[in-house]
Length: 407
Image (cartoon, rainbow, N blue to C red; front, side, top):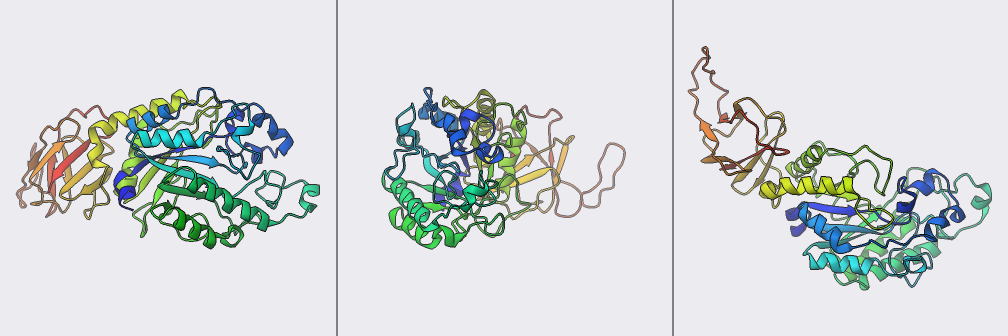
């Protein structure tokens, strides 16, 4: 877990046939498309501008240190040349493997490599139709018997291919179990115990998430931030605009400032952030996403050491602040900029120096007489144990100002 807890920030990439539809990665489900209707995307999939090195550069410049690619999403389309399937990229007009070049680009850039792999498959003829399947309302399709054991063998076989065909893989994100809803499926359906045992045998150092229905190395809150530290390692997977796949008409983008705050918030609670991009059907990360990645990268260039290698602090941060800590360095992230002073409970006598991380300029420590009363322009004493920092009136021009405290 060492690299995972240290690096803290990764890129998720949702990419596949749904990128041509450009209206959410669950478009086949939402619009109840048949395989025949969805085939138009397979017949035209030709990402001529695909450049995984450009993806890796964008991730690294944003301060991300690992990248996770959807090798197969719920629609069943495979981004590599699987020997077990015809529904794969080598059968499209593009005609070439996408996963190998992605892995090579990440390694070249010094990034850890992760795969997402769907446990669900709406295209496979033996995957049972349930309440989440696009053909859930097709009574004729429901009547045809399906053999989950055949699909389970296929699932295990494809995971074996992915973990033996591309060298060392650092991270594996399975998605997802739903035993309590929609005629759902869980660990027994996937043969999760055997699947995980195979994964550990093939890639002993790999990290695996918690969505097979059995415990994994970390848990994966999705589209929300936990309210505090969790008793296990965790990673929040988040989107830029509410959609995982490319969604052309979705303008609900989070601001760069909000995204930076989400990253800080996670690390302050001892968690990671896996932030998603959905490349276009031609293989480009869209400009709205690139703008936000660049903005995060600009903030990370100045403030990386308040994130990388940091985690939760034993100290309680004041309102509108988040603490992260790495050894004797405590970082105060100011979500709102106060006038002149910020008061830090419990830190009196525990800090020997303070500075703005953005430019390394000193922030003065204020000593208070515990008995002093407020009078005119003179503030009164703070509660015992409080450290007060004196701030400049003008806020630094960064998404979130950070004060570095040397304990």
